[in-house]
Image 1 (cartoon, rainbow, N blue to C red):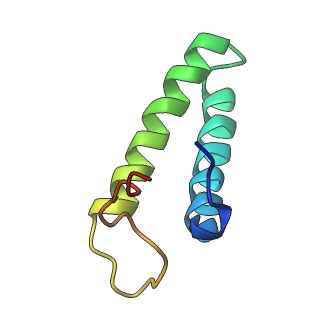
Image 2 (cartoon, rainbow, N blue to C red):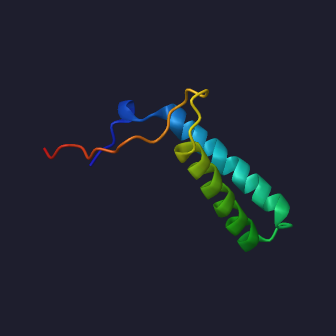
Length: 75
């Protein structure tokens, strides 16, 4: 199964990658370089940012949010 890269929402991918970067960076600072602690903090921070971005109404910012996902047709 191949991925059609022209259908990828690259703005959304970039935004989520930025959230992951910020989460990992802050997690590393907060946990004093403890790898497991940093991973836990980063996961919690990313989950909070993800939920805030996708489920909190913010009509002033016209960037992509999660819509519905449709499975590609068979064939």
